[in-house]
Length: 178
Image 1 (cartoon, rainbow, N blue to C red):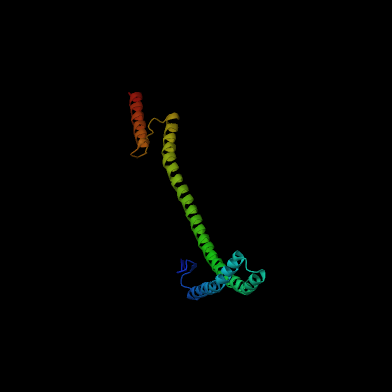
Image 2 (cartoon, rainbow, N blue to C red):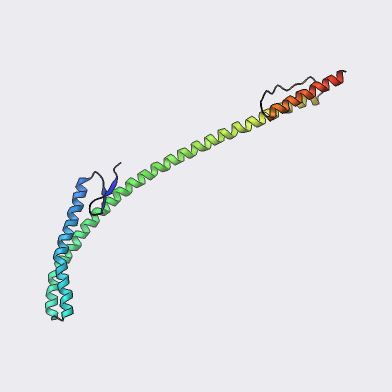
């Protein structure tokens, strides 16, 4: 994607678009040329009204300046049109980049939700499975089977609980036998 940069005049243009840069520079040169012709006429009008020059003389200067001001507005409008076109192009590019960014953020969000769901499922299963197994062992004991032992082999609190259950069952079995 092309990037934007400011040219020597400070105007933002698309990098890599030399025709546009040349057109903008030409428009700026045209503006300066018209200004160089118009500003002295404007100074004459201001000076004439300050000095009390006859109204007719001031009107002659104003009438001479009128076409120059029209030309000045025309070249400024050309420049504004070029900038507007550049802004449309750059705006479309910015919207495209933003849309791509949004798509990636949605994709990353979905991946994060799926990963989080999988992590939560494994975490819940790692807690519920040992509890379920110990519950089944206690249910067998409740039915009268004192030979029941837990086969849970873990190195955590559930493993310690299963080991304690097995010791309890062994001692109960030994106490009952004799």
